[in-house]
Image (cartoon, rainbow over all chains, first blue to last red):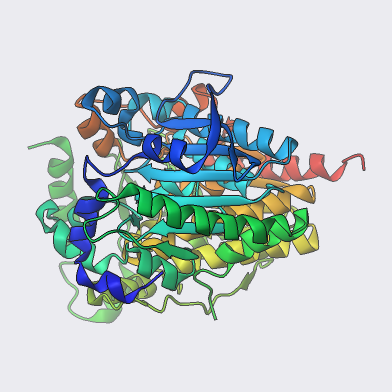
Length: 271
Length: 290
């Protein structure tokens, strides 16, 4: 939670840590955060998008639904899960499991780690924009608690679709932005190599997003990032998720929807 | 030399001829830019003809880009439009100097304070909450002011149980506003979900371009989604996709006809038919069984 600590690193250093191949991935966190995870596959329409792991498990003996973006740990895994970049079928799978969670009154916990939604031919043909839009709309109406944990990289609409949450928890060295610093540099400076400079002004760190009102709590990491000591990070996460869940589970359906929407309603308001 | 530049040269000569005797401002005003070249077929048309044809090329049916004011004039009953939140201006919270000058330019170019103009008006006597994005204003991009204005219009429609019609022309989220801009996707989508719950009718009209964070939020959430012919509609930019998959994409990729074929549009409607189509749809939805 300490925001001062973060000032030791430049934003670009955080980007590098967040993207590090050795940084723990969703598959590392799931068995440490939850018990008895059972994975569910498929969107019931086209295919199973492996960039998103979905399923049910227990958190502190409470049944929950997990929706986790997965980049994979080896090159082989990277390819299978498309480096965590989801296709429309991934967002449809997320919606299917979110509705299932609502039906059985289970809180939803999302783990966010993606460079963005996949910009591919098939993704466009199958309605990437439509799938993300529907995901945003659906999550804004869910009558169960939603908690989002930003693990490493939160890239644009692709990450946002799973971030419509009552509580957003972000790791200290994770980054979250409208597009990659490289993309930002190429649009605004017409020069992709100015990514470092772009990162500094993009307000993409946990502290920046806390100030905006999007992030509710920041999880401190070891000096060299979560890759140094995942157990420490997991313990802090369990503590924070427990607090957030306790608070959310006290709320009635309508209050949950209202408070979730108010959070976003108040970001960027005209006078 | 391509046909376009040849044509442009001919036109320039023609314009020079028209302007040759004028040396004061009053004459200049009486000889306005009377010729427009179609960006699609390069045919030249007088502005008068184009105006009569709602800025649709007579030769190739290309739909020219329209301003917010033109949209209002073509779709709403005369003098029926009352704008809401017209004063709202972006505060340029991050203090980009380049962004501030872009904003200033866009304001003087369009005569509006932001890329979204919304309010209450009538279509064939049906009262509607109506909004339009103007691509002449920083590509119709959605910063926090645009997002908040749209959200407020949706909330007004929800309160008044009034049909909502949005004409979209936007490159997506406004990069200069960063995360603040991204969050508007959630805000607008959540407001539409509440509008949906009370049974509100939302018709979105997608025009060139409808991409990025705007297509991935309110644009694609219409109960009925219409589009203009050949409108560019998609999530990622074509060049980004080509670079990612290392493949050249066909001409028709992300065009309205392609998007309709893939199942994401209800209907493609020409500009001349649009007002009538909206009026018919509003008629039909008036006769709902409670």
